[in-house]
Image (cartoon, rainbow, N blue to C red; front, top):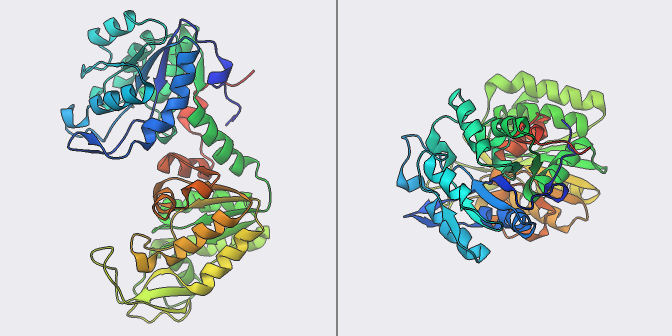
Length: 408
């Protein structure tokens, strides 16, 4: 997958209609936006295109839209907030058809520097099915140039992400990436393909199954692979340790053995917990007070459950990070939502905050943990896409990245 893509700095949009796929999948409560991070993240690309004299047409999905179009998942609140942020009116086309007559008219009436926001792309039904072909063409009919700035959706070959690019190119238009996409490619893509060494990867989270290909791919790329979170117990059991009632994926024991053998064969360090924080069971509710103790990783009692890495492991992992030049982290070290079980995740976040290395947080729970624990401003890059960043780390080609034009 070529990572050298045309960006908004490489295209001329003066007087042209520019369709921009954003990620406005923001959380809503009673019609109000509760976190505007994604809207703020889209502003630099939008402002650049407006400054260059483009007619900017924005599109995005919001929510899962399981039961058809509904006002609860309309992009109307996004249009309102965007207007405030840009200091100019964003013309919202509320038509559930997304690209119907109302959209065509709104775009035809645009002047340079105008902004139109289309309705939720998922209101058109399954974007990735055969329906997608007609929808791709209709989206392309509205524009001369296409810009993808929605990394969080770039692993999906949907009409508004990848399909539209073929139709834009067919009529001689260009397809570029926005600043947000460019940043993800620069950090995540280059970390995996061309890291400054030593390169340390830290993987956590609950299940080995979620990270099978990531573990396999990163073992070939990194110098040290650190395993924490619930997935560590499957590795510990594969080593023959008693893990009590800890989360284990018994079907993946052989896979874990293979990965430990692979690390040895490749001369890579694979670090597993040497001690673990245990309790009688999972906290209920998740942030409830809970009694814990710390035991060596091979001494977990049969009736206890491991819920975080222990103090010696936290030190071991922090040490491994100190000499690194590139660190990628995906997945917490324990049940970080509980203050008592967040110590391992905090220790890793603190180690990353204090290192001079390029530190990349791979979206999802690790991004939530870093934000929640107050370390966000100390990281080089926090990915905006959970599933997309995982697929990047797996070495998969992302349709939204592949679909953009390569730089000549």
